[in-house]
Image (cartoon, rainbow, N blue to C red; front, side, top):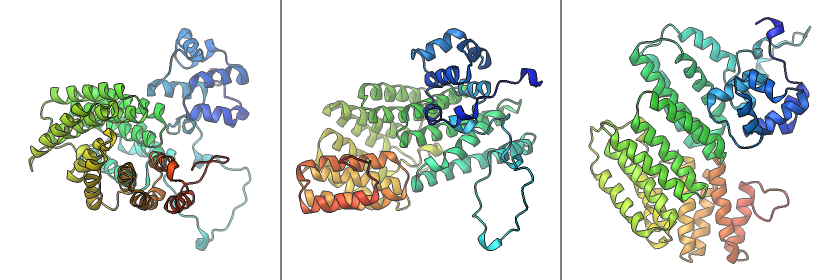
Amino acid sequence: MPDADRPQELPARLLTDPEMINACRLRDFARVFRLVKTRAGIYPSMIARRCELTPSRVGEVIAGRRHLLHMDVIERIADGLRIPGHMLGLARRSWETPQALVVTEREAHQPSEPEHEAPASLPGPDVDSILALATRTSLSPATLEAFRSSIEDYWRRDNQHGGEPLRPAIVGQLRHVVELLKENRPPSIQHGLYGIAAELARLTGWTYFDARQYNQARAYFTEALHLAKEIDDRQFMANVLACMSLQATYQDKPADSLALVTAAQDQARSAIGTTPRVLSMLSMREAFAHATLGSQTRTHEAIKEAHRQFERIGQDDPDPAWVSYFDEPKLIVDTGIAHGRLGEAATAEPLIADALRREDHSNQRGRAFHAFWLARTQLDQGKLDQACHTATQALQPASAVASERVSGHLREFYDQLAPHRQEPVALAFEAQLREALPLVSGSTRP
């Protein structure tokens, strides 16, 4: 691109301003556009032209009447305004100077000291471009399997440590696969790439959901739906809608939760070959929605249907890999949680306790999450000592995983202890909670 046509760079002082950094992190483009206008002199008509948007659309965004969620639009904004990719949760943009080429003038050579070498870091974003060149002409079924194996590894590490530290690598791989989709390939390879991109987008959405960053989660879940729709993968679309339903439950939007899981079930039933395990999982998500709405009869009906479908599972069922987590302990613990959401603590407690005993110890987040629910059902029954002991057991796995969702649940349990705050067992739990989870300055609660 000739220098005269090159987009104007944003001032460094704007890109390093905390307000701009926070606006980009939240993808609050109303604030981003206002800052760009006032601090860089780039007016809405110029923003529209550079980002390939209409002036009216930019005006609606600035006025707060429209939100920009689609990834292709976000990428156009990053490229048009020259906002570095990492500020918007994207991979390094093609116009950014590769980190490997950024050197200090006349930098003095420092002799290496092997005994003090820093540990190896993850590959830089520039490596994605190099790998793209290497794979562009040689994609094969084995390449697709390698992508799928990496996704399985991401999920395993997400369960063990939380997804937030993994997110840059996941987003980088997603952008890489989306770039591969732009080239002509055999239909089977192209179909596989769409499926992999959809899984990576859902995984990214999940990491944002687990961090309680709900707007970003919804944007990536929506991208996953678009990608799955390209190949008419209705089972996977059902899976994404089920994730969005669970998020709506956390956002205290039970009506939205029910609408989303109903749409998920419609997609699954219209697909060819939907397996009983998928239908069982979806029925359990329906039970969560009904329980949050306080509908006892419909919750019990959905639980019954989840168990009925689970009993139909055959050894040779062609289950998608993404539903393999929904095994018998998961069915049992989710049944307990559904009863717990209804306030049926006496029914919930033994179910959750049984599942927790059988749960994989490497799943740190799951163990912390389910221990919280067990503690909650015990507290609801007046078993203060047991509840505090169980909640204390949840602290170790909770501190090992970066999950704001789990931390929030433990703080929620602390709030529920308010009537018993001066009891010795509650004071002991509070002390350990304060040690495990940092307090907000000036707050009376962890």
